[in-house]
Amino acid sequence: MNEFGVGKPLLQQFVDFVIRTLKGDLGTSFSMYPTKVEDLIFSHIPFTLGLLLPATIVSWILGNLLGAFAAYRRKTLTDNALLSTFLVLSTTPYYWLAMLLVYYFAVTLHLFPAGGAYPITLSPSLSPTFIVAFLSHYTLPFLSIVISAIGVWAIGMRLMMIYEFGSDHISFAEILGLSDRKIMTYAFRNSMLPQITGLALNIGSMLGGALLTEIVFNYRGTGYLVFRALVTNDYPLIQGIFLILISTLLIATLVVDVIYVYVDPRVRTGYSER
Amino acid sequence: MVKEILIGVFRIKKFVVSFSILAGIILMGVVGPIVYAVVPYKIVGPPEARPSETYPLGTDAYGRDLFAQVLNGIRTSIYIGFLSAIVGTAIGVVIGTIAGFKGGLVDDLLMVVTNIMMTLPAMLLMILVAAYIEERNVLYVALIISFTSWGWIARGVRAQIMSLREQQFVFMSRMAGLSDVKIAFADLLPNMASYVFMCFILLASAAMLAEAGLSMIGLGVTSGYSLGTILFWARMKEAVRRGLTWWFIPPGAILVATTTSLLVTATALDEYFSPRLRGS
Image 1 (cartoon, rainbow over the protein chains, first blue to last red):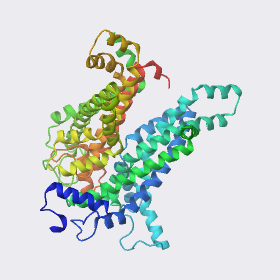
Image 2 (image 1 turned 120 degrees about the vertical axis):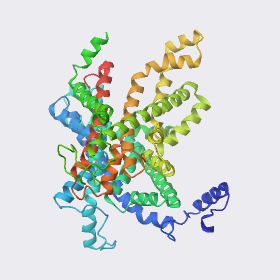
Image 3 (image 1 turned 180 degrees about the vertical axis):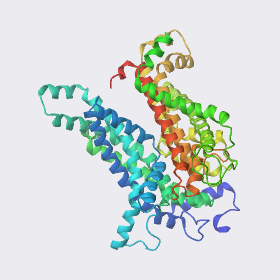
Image 4 (image 1 turned 90 degrees about the vertical axis):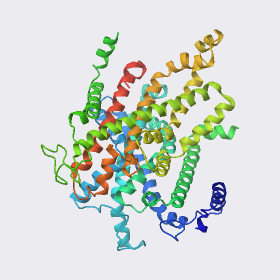
């Protein structure tokens, strides 16, 4: 009991918590006593990041390309069909899509395992058997995040591209007789900028979605850890996970902001002129 | 006038299709539980029965009627969606209006709070708050969702107010000696009506998805059914791995249909009433 400081006044407990946290000690888990919270988190977070980051990047790239393609074919049947698909995808919850994918690919076709991050008979290592097993467990959670995230990116990109096509410099390029391909590149590059901002703004909601997906798949990441901590009322663990996840998220947002400076020349010159 | 608008709106194919789907689902939620008066948490038949004439959507692992659960679930989900949207939009509009209109220190302080709310991932906050509340009724869940997701509305409203307040008609009102509150409500808000309406719709559909997400991990309403709690039970009882498709497909499909049709209906209306958007 002394270890958790339960008897002390609340303010004292809070001050203790802040001081300990600053020293890098997140306390001891209730449910998995005497494991330290930070050890639990650091053994689970690579799985979350390994799932979330590639899925975000792949869905962002695919979404941008598909959105640009829909905008290029604007006012045709292709665009209509694509736009409707994007709309439906953008409101499809990750975890429900995950359930459908598990049902079709794991239960009906037996192509991929239905859950877990790797078989319980193996322990994490870099051996070929483990990597193959890991990847086959990885496929379905990865796909469910990528597919349902594509919609949001594609809708944004399509709209930006359509605005670009209506702008003066594109009309000028058309009058000059530049090739479609060239014009598309110009429009695409300009439309990418708001999409990078969107990336920074959306990482948070993607993280939330990824946590739920992990729970559906019993995937060994922080989402699964959060769920276990919630079920067992493991408050030190819950606090610790949230602290680490939110810090990670802030770092990711910062990285995107820095990337923005490199991608957009206007931001760069704006800074150096000051 | 009203008749002309109605005729015009109902000529848009997109609107007609999405609006009928939306109206159909809302009707199912509102009237459904009265017409199909099976108690959703009462055991009425054999467990895991396939959809049949007696059980239109089959039964769950305890033999409870899934169609009744879905009807009640639609009602709860839509109720939570709109309630959170009303509260969330109100918070966002009030904070955004004050920040944009007053400027200076008030603006700075309010924007610090707003930025913090926007940076913290809403889903994480919701999970955290919901986990500390033992008994969660529909109102609590709606409030948890609205308190964590008003940030971007406040930001948008503030930006709109800041550009609007420099307009000539606001100066006229000021010269006429109208109070700040009156200017904000009589001059500024009506000019942002379409923006606020879109915020409301977006928030309503996001709130419905958030509710389902919370319920899915057992942090939604503690009594009664929402579309998310049906998915929660389906997951707890391994419905997916045992191929009980009638259990986990309908709630999700209805959720997607509701949110999508809500968004499309709102976009179609927005395009109709602001001609600048037409044709894009």
